[in-house]
Image (cartoon, rainbow, N blue to C red; front, side, top):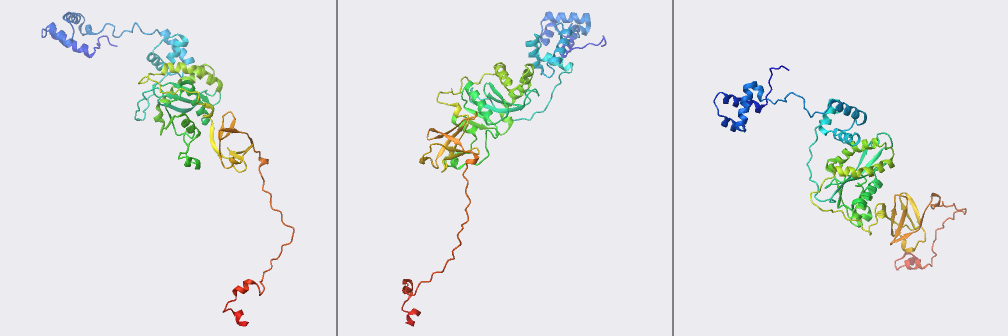
Length: 428
């Protein structure tokens, strides 16, 4: 840089013009102080500096000099080495948290971002996002809970592919989740059951149109007679618990749960990598210990005080709600059909014929057949026990030829047909 080059800010340049007018006698010191917003004494100091150093006297003395509070180069080099070895794919904010917790190095998010950019460990991601209508959060805790499943490489190839079933409160951002092998009826029911046991029964549940939550089939005859629409097993369980089910029309409508999944896909994946988690059981045990810390960091206050979660009373049996349940007709042979199999009722009675029975199947394999509030004993009908219709045997006797019957002349039928104009009467 050339030594005779002077860099002034806009404010300093404006002050230079005023000071020159003071020095030329065009302005008084008091008037110049009012224009610059300073005292008369400061005006005299500025005049003295300009006389001694020229325009350079208005520039700050530390301009162009390195800051005395800058981070030492040795520490910057150490941070780069640590981040490159352990936290290379971490975002700056998450990496700064790990540097403080693990390495006891305190650095701000922005400073670490600058260090990572300069070292080539981070680059600015600019992407244009679609604009969607913003929806205000619910006012009360427990008023609405968003639920969804996240298919992601949670174990990064160290173990099986997992699905994170998650629920997040719309007002306070409190998250609950569990890992499963797939997304279906059992994972959805089991995750909701775990949430209810932790926090209570929410007023409403916001889900998408996955086949687990919404069916496309037509209502059955029994549903039509009861004036009901076709339901999935999950919808049936929500109705029994008094939970209003709301179906979203797009992923953006469930923005709360989608953003939480995005944060977990960045942070939880790396946390499990550091903990060397590689199985489904280890993942759930780690998640159970991790969620309290996660919620403490990302939870927020609800707009209004109060908790609308309904407590779980003793009258509610979650085991008989979160299961497969439907009515089946007891056929004439005293058996029912359930999921492609037939089950014979033991100790049947006549009043059971063509009457409905409630079938309850738990996810551990237990099954209950209930008729008029009483659990019936049953057994599965094996394939060889199914009744076979025996073919008709051909008759060994010769076929008898039918002879046409001709009534005699004195048969009453003939007498009744003989009238006054009958041809037979004329022959007599």
